[in-house]
Image 1: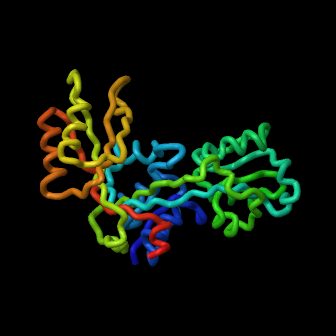
Image 2: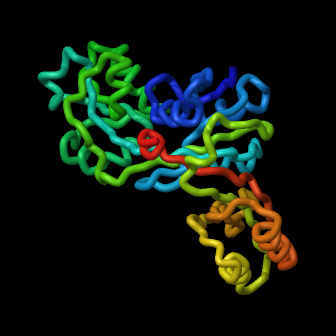
Image 3: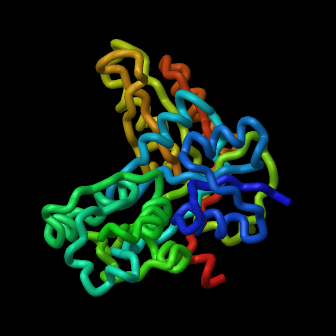
Length: 289
């Protein structure tokens, strides 16, 4: 049976994405994003699935930096999951939830609920956890404290918490992109016919002292009519002012267009690395199939 590592414990949005990608796979909860990737490298799991970008808070830098600088695992699929954050408390505090003294959750979840939290609990401290499910688990295990957790409905049910305020995220159109990483090219359970689109992700480092280099990089995609859904710079960690670019192109890696882009960019002196050409899925769309 296929083994899949995900950011645990049970009840995370990452588990939801993993169930979408691998409905019959054997899921293994990991404590951190780096642990998910390391488990693939050492062969403990066949794949791992980790968050890479949120529609509200942007990129998950830990995923990107670890993927680029530590473990260069290929991306083999993407799953987009709708994010609905709720405030939950231990049942014995359900009638006095306004007296919550501390909020526990993942840093991005707390950021996604900034307006609600500052308006409702201006004096409550925020404690960051590795995942929203870990936060729910913490609240469950500390009933003597009047604490709140931000997380999803599955976590509330799993850990026996009561949701006292639903949909506390600041924006309704909240989605997170998750990527499936593999140590080798193996066949996914996902049906490629149900994919919403295909995407190729490239890491590009520009040559130094080359005026207009980024313009020429973008032109290589433009004249081939390849749409770019994301362009982001990240530090190379070699000194101030040194960056590489992550580019998502809405184009499968074929024998003509993407190789042509790569050859043109390398001719300009750029360093180009393709870290994945893969199908993209939506948890919402697959529920309708």
